[in-house]
Image (cartoon, rainbow, N blue to C red):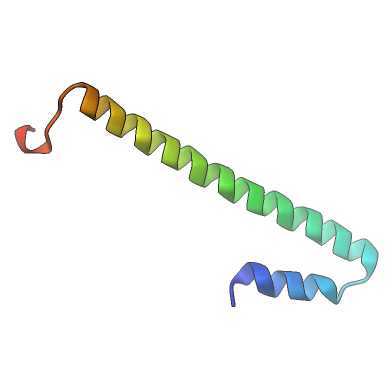
Length: 61
């Protein structure tokens, strides 16, 4: 079971006040991970586009 699912199960057992705080933190954590993945993907696409634009070939380097 993924760690996020385990955390969500643990949150369900908390009192409502604490559960809302932890749920907020979990959502922020997931958003930060998505942002990092998107940023890495964007950089990879830009690098590949620059390489293709310059008619680069890895064999010629």
